Image 1 (tube, rainbow, N blue to C red):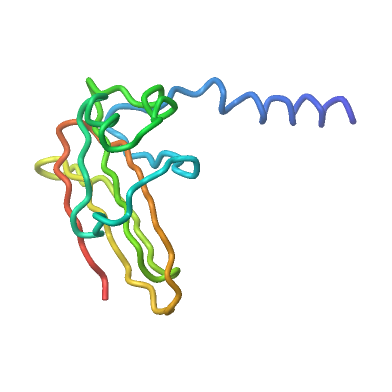
Image 2: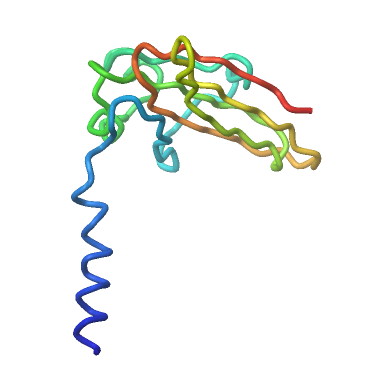
Length: 135
């Protein structure tokens, strides 16, 4: 019984290592905890779209780990960096009806605390970026 649990735990730990970085046609959020981003120019309504590794170097210093996760031939990055309520929320869905678009939905937080928010998404290269705000 103990051996079965140990094997199961080992499989669960190894599974994420065997998955590909991303599938074309999907939207995924990349980890931004270690990135240093300039918030002074960031606005939720104006994300930075990054289509090449050179643009990534200009937008985010020391982004080598991000480069390994993105195939710029098939994907582009959308960077959101803003300061606002700790309750601010950002979600995304891929709309494939008609022209492919990534629809980002922003929900304004109601708390008065100030937090820095950074979200980095990999989306299909041909997808249009749309932003909706929920009040």
